[in-house]
Image (cartoon, rainbow, N blue to C red; front, side):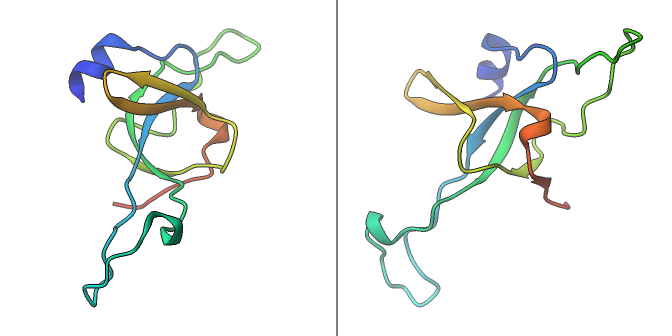
Length: 101
């Protein structure tokens, strides 16, 4: 994934994320068909832009960093396909929450 971060660098306050995959087996060992899998809106941050600028031209620091786990809205991110993987690109302000480590 590090090579992806070098190939696609977000600009301004944009964030590149990779959605986490839902578990296909329950704790009891039951395998779930795709239609029963929960919709995953959790993702790992792969790359971040430098941040947006305020009215005075000062850089506003990003609230997320590479490797953070975040909660995404259901819609609104731009799908980016690189090699055989899917990533999503969105503004940092569209991220709903960051999971505590």
